[in-house]
Image 1 (cartoon, rainbow, N blue to C red):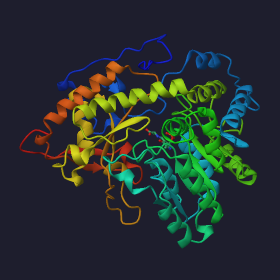
Image 2 (cartoon, rainbow, N blue to C red):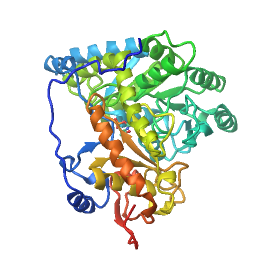
Image 3 (cartoon, rainbow, N blue to C red):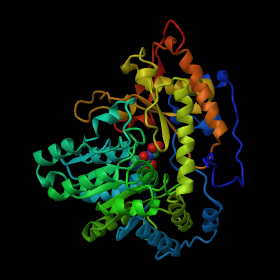
Image 4 (cartoon, rainbow, N blue to C red):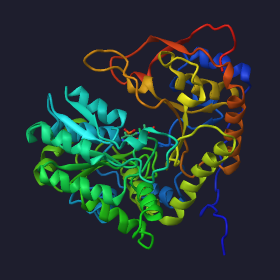
Length: 465
Ligand code: F0G
């Protein structure tokens, strides 16, 4: 019998969210310098800015919070988490950190040096930031299919082997500290990486004697896609798939705010003892002692439970289906979105949605602002503002895609909220021909400018969008 899916949980507590008017929101976004990060959350109706740390914890996770062990050294919650990480990932060594970028900071302090090159699949911005901050650079080796939002490819996060081999063969081994593969690939639209791809990438890395690391923020969602799209995995459990995937690699950095199902947390897990020892020193310097790394004992306990819950099929099925529901509604309305849908988010293709807004007027940002004004929905620009300037020429680097990401927090919004979001976007899409001008930057930070950038609206004859 083909029954519809339903969430494998029910609501125990609710949090009220306040609707507002278009007039109010026009004022608020101007006061926020047209940067959605500057809005206070009470001015947002549906918050799809990120799926990071914004989900709901389960009653079992909250119960674990109550028995958290806050000992400075050797906390029982740490031991619980350490055991869970080993069981789920298979890696020997583990260091907690306060979030994903902290894991990057600690590990890259050991591994990345000036003039190094780090190949990968569309590195996330903090990953790229931590590499470039060390005067090293990244090379994007994502497959070309990832940059066409309309072609179907089941694993658009895959690494292109030719591109990777090109980088590996042209550079000496000591210039490439590691290859990093992000699962799912956030910057390419929440797209998964296949088991077959990681196996071959692993083989290539071994051939050139270069370690392979995983940016594992959404590793469980990636495993769901392997189970549902890749031949041979349909009957394997998520936990088995996860273990096999990591077995082809040497280590991982993790933002536990995604597939750890917690509001704050991260960790490093790896096999190389020497790197672990060196990273421990940086962890103690930057994060805290090696048995808490910037986390409360209770947070580590909740994370241990979260990792187990996130790697259960029923949870993942309802999660991914909810995101796909939003995508399907938009496709039905003819709205250009990245396909297939990402695991954690739907990405609007601003190049197709508002092609009349010049690229140097930040068309994806203009679209994100309009979503907020019309519906109180907060998404985020994944386009030229995020891509930032070239570290050497200081000029804008225009990425192939201009996207607005609508990231869906885990276990938080209902299908009805998704229906509302789709209806707002449809209303904007129906009037898109009026959109001709965008925004100009009036203030930007030297690195990771999107968080603090200030913009002003470029005057136009007609109304924006
Ligand atoms: N790697 C990936 C793939 C991410 O998506 C993120 C964060 C990080 C690393 C950094 O982790 O935030 O815990 O320090 N992504 C968030 C997002 C911010 O909205 O996609 P963090």
